[in-house]
Image 1: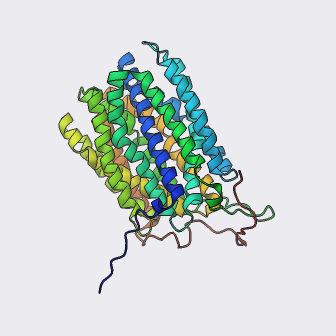
Image 2 (image 1 turned 45 degrees about the vertical axis):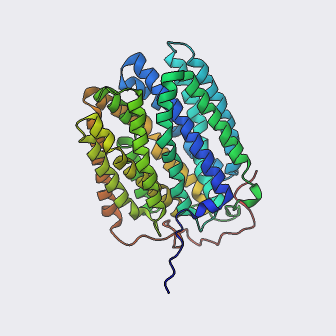
Image 3 (image 1 turned 30 degrees about the vertical axis):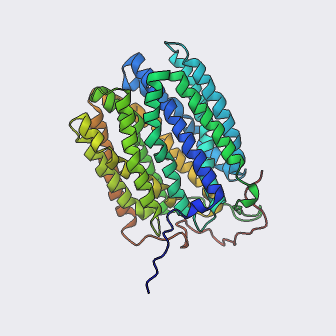
Length: 425
């Protein structure tokens, strides 16, 4: 008699805390699309320039360059649950200010940029804490699956958020879209508040008399940081590139913009599920992830019409979802739990800190040529990163979470102790 093992891909959802966390993140990211689509269309309508649109992206993500590393250190010292409670309330207040700024038929873009920059500062701490809390919710056994599944919260939001945002913008205007996003942050506050602190796993840290953390990351981790930075700079500005390609290259309307992002997100959900189904994840897993992502970008770049562009949208989503799932899982699996906050702050720095520069560069590329050229540049860069991973790390088998982390050991490294938790309320 043969007994088939129960699939464990969705095992983290059996944890009530992870289900609450995932729900809050999915709804928050859905709300973010209402803001992103509305601001994008307001700026494009006012200026007709993709480079002007990149100003919103720059204002939103530039604070990460300054604050992501401090945010990581704080996330390793203060319980991420506490950080998320504070940032969700602050974000709701700032987005409310953006809603007021868009009441004017011709909003002052300088005011909008300033408020978006303030929101970017708050979101820096939120993004790092949202990654650091995953270990505390599910523990070490389910970490890589949960980290990969967390990317589906972003993808699922993209499956419905842009379409709903396009409809809301057409019928209710930009201010209503901002209010929806503000409400989504309040939902995050409630979902995090319902996670019981007593059920969280502590991330142990060293005693004050013990040796400091490693002075430099391992070769695999450096490889991950490099790949993350290059891909973020040249290939991950999809909010700008897809929106500009549909509106400026193919002359599509708000509904077409929403459809492009939604179809892309359908594939991203599938990609995240495939990533979560891997039995083991390491930095070497980025070889296939980058190759798939690069190929999907090139396929979209080759689309000659809007209809074909929409048709191949799910393929791009599959590449994005698989790449992000593998990246997050590999980063968290490659370091001890006590260093997750700092490690993910560096991942966040590369992933989002490069967005302003990528937005500026891709905005210029699109204005000078087309969105398809920007997609082709991203695809080429992602494939080059796949080659880079092979050149740096070879093709040896991936390590599972239970294997030795891909970090260089410290000299006379004493065992970690449970006596002093790494987080506090």
